[in-house]
Amino acid sequence: MLKVKLTITDSKCRCGYFKKGQEFLVEDLCPPLCHELWNNIYPFVYALQNGALLDYGSNRAKMFDAKCPDEGRVGIHGEIVEE
Image (cartoon, rainbow, N blue to C red; front, side):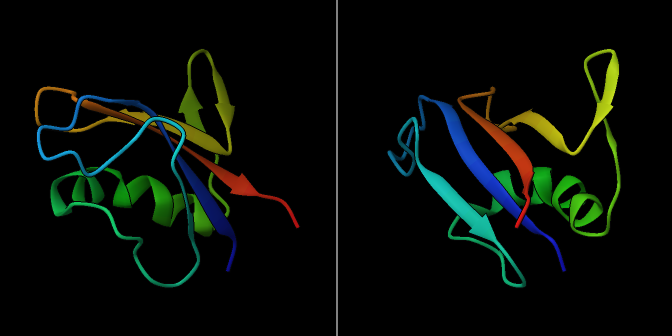
């Protein structure tokens, strides 16, 4: 299974869970993210782990950008980690 690196790109988390620049590596278990953010990005992570290319701007790439569903307070970037 492919690994996905998640990087917090912006954080105004009302609970203070995330800091800009934090990184998480997703292998087979979900990382320590709040469930709202994880539920929002899980389909993208799963697709990348299984070889998908995602819409990324006007291109297709092995990465995505997403925002927390709580008013977009946290930005996150996900990408395949090439070994």
